[in-house]
Image (cartoon, rainbow, N blue to C red; front, top):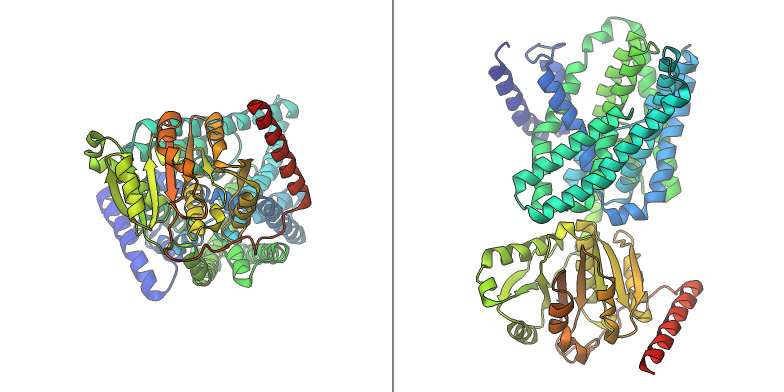
Length: 632
């Protein structure tokens, strides 16, 4: 086909039809796109020729997959599994590296070639991550461990590549190896500063002032591409830069936000299919019958990669006490390979360490491993999604929530912006059955609170939720005895998970014990810090700790409930006087009419460690002494 419009029409048609056919045949779409690339590419029917445009958009697809993996991480869960991810990253690199080095040595390759092939086996890219995302199991422990371990394994592989490449390049350069390594360290430092420090600050500054979805989307895409380019310029790979960029922007792009929906839609509909088509177009199936050397090397590569990553997944299951389905999911995610392998074999071929047979064998390996990984990941993700459905149901809020906004009549008259704020809060807190009410003043709001027994959240937005860095949560004495306390805690946890904000609880010792028990539940982990607040009289200590991007959350209560305090009447005045320049959220737990106050936690709590108990008591004693001196 010579017409560019005809090629474009063919490509768009393939992107549209392939998923439909694959669903009918029960085949993962990833496999379908790769096979279509093989059939229609230059080594097949030749209807789609390799071009710079397809190559650039295809590279964008791989960057997008790695960026998506970084931006969709639940940072609370990621912090919980960070040590496991580091250990697994070392597993998933060293085991395949050792097997790859040995198999390459048995084939008669030199030491440098064996080391570089070992690095190729040790690396992996999250080719099948879109399957995990589609089934909604991104928060699973195995996925968090694999995603974190991917960054470790890629870094170690690229480190081996950089060392071997430097030995070859410095042999023909006047620059000393020490100077070359110093230059590389400076480039890497610049990449880290720009991606991890400058880009999040710039994005937060922009999101506070601009709410246009199109401009926000383009800003994120620019940061993604620049991060990938800086990583490549620093001697790393663009996929690593894309992943780091995703992690850096994680808290600014909530998974349930319109911005994330736009990124996911555009990536899955355009970038990823073009990337997979590009991978298929590189594969020349005729190599299978042109010579036994390429087939033999490809067979050894495939078996070595499967053995190495399979053994790594088994060791990971044993080390982290995972299920057999989670082991299969780890195996499916880690033995797929594309961008990292192509980068290593291409550079190895350019510097003379790899022959043309190794290059062709690596391309055939990509076809086989991407196909097998797609089926394994799809099967495991489907079963894990079914297993987790019951757990997810237990965390969903069954009670209807009433979402309220309070303001002057002229402000409430602007109902669209106020309602949109409430809908955004409801969406990020996963309160899908919420009702929205706009109150003209606090008297109207308090009357609404007393007339109904349902859970109520009153919200005031000073800045967009995705730019909030901390949630300072005031929890009154005996709040853990309220009937709806778990639901209120769940709202805070889900909000923190979506916007990536750290949580600081202000509560007394007994309530802190209940909060700690909730924060440590399997699958519902929340990393939080705690401040001693002996009683509600000390709530204004929050104002002294507030920073520019903090949001205050106060859990209040109605009359005749376990945690009610007469000082709650002062909350409206307190919010207007001390927290007017911050976003705030006021929560009223559901009141169960005519029922005894349940002792939800105190009988089932894990014992507090002696060291923590002593420290807390010491802090409480010091605070009491300071108050006595102030009163005196």
